Amino acid sequence: MQFSPPTLTDIANLALLEIGSRPIDDIDDLNTGSSGDAVRVAFWPAVRETGRSHPWGCLKKRLNLTQLSFPNEEYYSSFGTAIGWPGCYPSTPPPYWLPNTLYSGGNLVTYGQAIYYFLGPSGPQVSTNNFINDLSAGLWGQIYSSFYQSQVGPAGRQYEWQFGYALPTDYLLLNELNGVGCYFGKGKGDLYEIFNNQVTNSQSQNVSNQTALFCDQPYADIKYTALIQDPTVWDPLFINAVAVLLGSKIATTVLGDSGVMMQKLKAKFDNEVLPDAQLKSAGEMKVPRYDPTRDSNFLRSRYGSTAG
Image 1: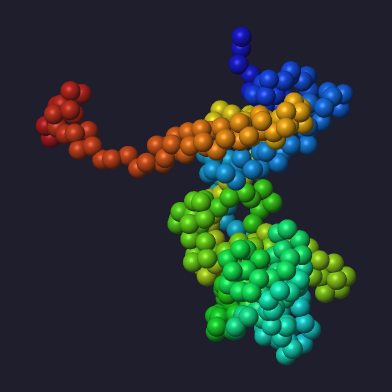
Image 2: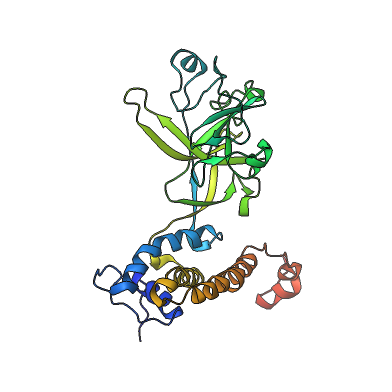
């Protein structure tokens, strides 16, 4: 049997084998029954989730980011919010944060010397009795701080960071920023921050959203985990991880077993598949130790005279 690169259908069938279900002929065939329907719905979410779970070598890319342009302070003072948020402290600030209050996505509040916007990961939500608790729970993102108004970067008068950079559409996970390792969120909050940058067109008032990286450095060279959609470049560890996670997502629909297989495969993904990948990656990323015997005259003499 001759080896051929894996296809999306091959990977889908690996997931179906994980749950003991029959394979399908083509993932794009709409006549594959409930198994095919479940696979099509869950396939790319499973790939994205797997990609974000670990800095996979087969998904690694490098890119010099494009710096975002920000209107100057005078533009804000005269015309308001060109990018959707105040760029300098407004003459009429947003209302102060209040406890036990319902906030929705995009709501602005003042807390201390900063302005925050509501992230609302699960939709509208009632605030707690402590703003710091809400902040640590990820409900608020800071977009302005008067403390940083002396910064000279183009974003320095609008954000707590001096510079902003557009992240690529295939971005999944930051691995390195300007030579500094950022694996598993290292440096987040101290070296950089990633959040959604909302831009409002001053003419049409249409709003667009862009994932952006903010930091205090005038350039941003990153290594990142990308959503590479070509399965022929995926390595076996990643393919196996996708298959197991995909299997966990479709198991209940296909088998109707009240979640028994789903829990089993999710535990396998968390406790076996990812640890194996992390162990292999740790070995691959080790810096080789210098071996002085490799340059010794004794060994070099095997291949000829070491005399001058």
